[in-house]
Image 1 (tube, helix red, strand yellow):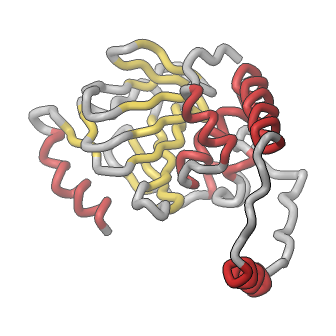
Image 2: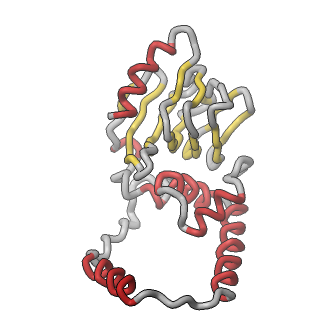
Length: 221
């Protein structure tokens, strides 16, 4: 797999430390499943983190705080979730996403956004960011748009191109308000992307900009 676009070292370090929001962590987890380079970098970061912890001096903890923490732990269910069946229908679905996807992408509820694009909402993070799948028909376009916040895109299937180049399965793309682009799926197959947005996108085309109020309303709901 020819993966050319990766999360930054800072994002990988935050993921290794467990400090990323769930939505962003899932995008990186899906990327690491496919990317041998980032898998190796993750291993190095985890080893580095272990060395840092080994060098730290123990610090005393207030007894009341300790008792409060153990009381909270005691109230959390210890039930072990059922393992994901090995006979999962669509082996292309990353393991980290199978809690949201019953057996395959086709089993999800897809909402038509345009003649070329469908979207399936997965969850909303604690910080308000929305995790969703976007499905683009072969040759379909998402229209010219910019972002009012950050957008993370992880390509799960197929490929698309925009003003910055070609992105293929496994690529990890980060966009912000400085970027205006028009993603177009390649004509040889559909494109499925995992996306995280912490604010609505903003269409800039003459016709598509009329969708902006609807997008803002859907995001806030």
